[in-house]
Image 1 (tube, rainbow, N blue to C red):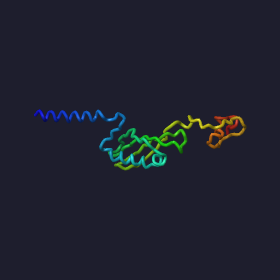
Image 2 (cartoon, one colour):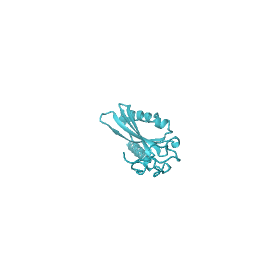
Image 3 (cartoon, one colour):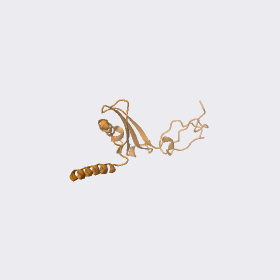
Image 4 (cartoon, one colour):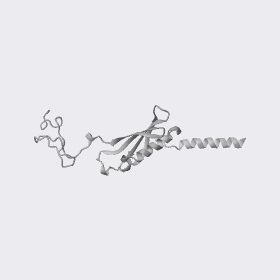
Amino acid sequence: MKTKTTLLMLVIAAVLLSYGCREDTAVVVSRHAEDGQRAAEGSVMNSYQYSELGGYNLRMASYRRLDCTECFEFTYIFDVDTYDLPEYITGFEARVTTEHGVVVKTEFIELGEAVEEVDLGCINMCGDGICQEVVCLGSECPCPEDEITCPEDCPQR
């Protein structure tokens, strides 16, 4: 009897310790959603954004059940190698919808500073009498102008 009680206490202690060692930021997926999770993760890893833009540090941010029993939306976040990208893109959020373990929709959202907040290093030529509507994007190019940003050069139409 004493041996059974001791064995039971050891099992309970092991279970409690295993839950205590779980990382706080980990998203635990129910067994019912595991097929969808595998398909979603594979979809992200095989995407252009992840495989061709040097994606790394893939992590699941969340998941939720949709209207049907086997339908889920998984949200992943990952960083990218910004070497070939505009400086304001640092990563992507991927929202993957699965039905019965099959990916039916994948949507990517750029992460980083908003374009308006990035200093593109352009030359302000407002006031030169020429409306610079279409410009190049290099550091030696003029800043884009319109009737709001440079009303002197670009009158309202």
